[in-house]
Image (cartoon, rainbow, N blue to C red; front, side, top):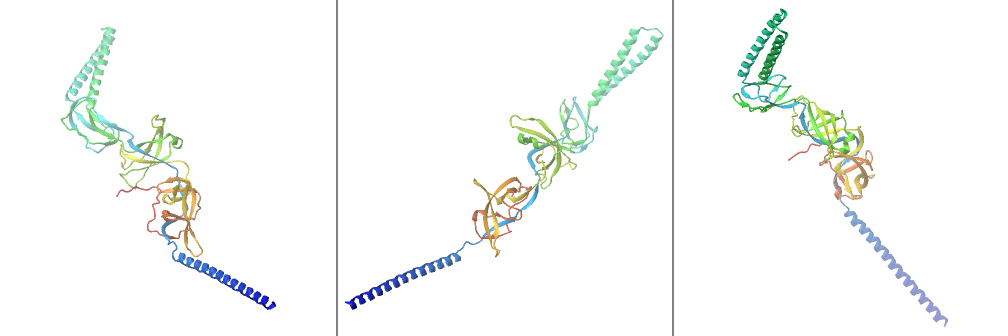
Length: 382
């Protein structure tokens, strides 16, 4: 009986050892498989990591910002008139050329005044006779040969004759058209022998230096515009050129329909490049100059939950990756936008290619297609 019990205990221990060995082998096999699987996955992922994305970037820095108000306006001559006739008459001579500069008082057109001059001479002769009669009657009155009433009648007749002669002289003068001020003459279609009626246009005369520029702004900007502020003009006729001037008046009446007010600037024009009627872009330099961190507008991704940029981060090995961050934007000018909060001076920011980025994306920085970053760009048509 004792040998049988001993034999049964040995068999049980042997079975337990076998079970433990089998379970241990299975566990070792399972752990080894998992380690091998993790190694293979890591190796696979290392061989299939995201390739670097090509983007452009810029280093953030401060730039000076001049607060500006932009508008569109039109050029107007300080003095400009259409020279017309006060009287009718036949053109005897045209004494100017189209487009030439004229001086004040320069004769432009002579109308035929022969009959009027003859009448003037007749009236002047009558006035001279009346003066002679008055002088003779005055001596006779002193000798008490005529009455005071006769002398008064002679004096009145003399004044009347002289007034008639003066009126006729004024009529003769109107037959000569003169430039009322210095300026540039326009194109005329009047020719000698042509008959002109009262009010017919002969030629336009425009004073071109300086010129006025009229422009309108919304009433919200009324407090920012005042006389003596500097303005700059640009126009398509002279690309790349800027014309400086100053605001000289602000209209006290705001248009009730558009709620806009009108302002007027004076701009020197010594080269006569600005002509009345031209369309111009007006920039009013308002307020004190400020400094902002500045980025190209293409750097900003505008979202309903906020504006973001992608910062370029470097690790110890010099590898560059993208990291998204929120920013608070300020005013814009041209291709640039001011950043009020979210980045600091010296940060490197992605300026193009953000759509293919996410946090941790490797970056390859390119300088071949950098976005526009001009504070005052000039549109180009191709």
